[in-house]
Length: 262
Length: 264
Image 1: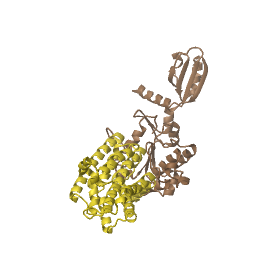
Image 2 (image 1 turned 180 degrees about the vertical axis):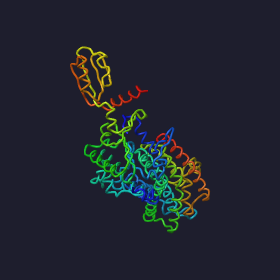
Image 3 (image 1 turned 90 degrees about the horizontal axis):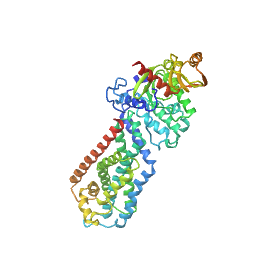
Image 4 (image 1 turned 45 degrees about the horizontal axis):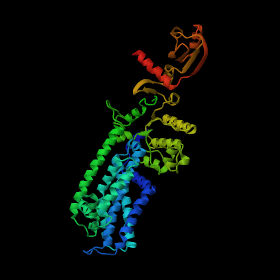
């Protein structure tokens, strides 16, 4: 039959391309997602950033650039936590995963497609937010600074992907949006992503250095020379949190696995 | 694979597909573990308890699934065989239950598989959809594809299958061709209402199995209702009313399992 003439399995590259493309379209057609990730960071920056955008910090850094870096970090983190958290929980609710498991698509390719898709949306949200900051907020930096910021934030987003997976496997489709909000919003706030830590209550300043979003914010701030810890320290914290969240996600995945497919 | 609800049909299919692990023993597909990508590339699957995203169109989702397989069918062909040509541009979320079932069939065949696993494929299909589906199954079978499907309708199994495996409570209770099975499963149910009370002797040695018997009422399963009735009347049973109906599957199963127990 035809099977003898064919190579036996489909090329992984073709699978990845098709899968990523379909993920992109699926996300785009869910306005709750596409609007939220694009509009919310811009909205927050308008309220908390624009009024101070033209001021400078004591060390000479543009406050506008600092705040833009904060909301850029918030934005990428939200794409990851909400995209993966709600996305995975919804797919489990629709039992998309059951049918997918019976196809030749390797689970790793499916996950990689999700990651590529999330990176694409994170990039889109960054371009819109930074563009808005430049045009409306009058924040001026060299193009290389912006590119550096984008690269650092995208590369450092791994712990939030892991956190998203953990939420997606721990929560049902109805609970996941609430949990993602309850975890991510206070986390961002307490890490100084909405307003500088110096403006926040003392106890928040005390716990901030233990939070993942604080160290993630440092990546963004480091691009404009406003980080308050060494880059290697930030990276070490983020790596530690990645391991922790992955462990939680993996445990939840295994629990589901033995229940559904055991 | 034929059996009442809860017989273990879905579990069997899940085991064959490597979606569940067997407690004991092993499953091989094309000589490979069913989880092997080479085996999965030759399988098409339609599951009961599964879903797809609702925001892609029929054509889009068929195209994504085609990318998973080494030598897929053209998308139009798969969609056409499933009878969804008119809905190709419609989003999955707008499809009716029956159309959705046809979409799952399109997804199952789009990779041009050598073997198809269909778990209760006709559930939710209307008459028209079912007719188109049956025609596609027959065409695929004629093209040399192996089709494994589950159903709890005896008639559907008879109509479509070359081999029927009857399972009940997790055990195989029959494995035969439709003709053979039909001869072993009693096709008719006879219900009798007594004038004068029935006695056990009226029914001894008849070519029928007794489902229930009381002084006022008896019900029997048999493939030969006419000789059974003739013999009953000859023996002087006083019947004031009777009814002969097609036996339903549950009763046929009862007869089969009872026979198994009797032989043991």
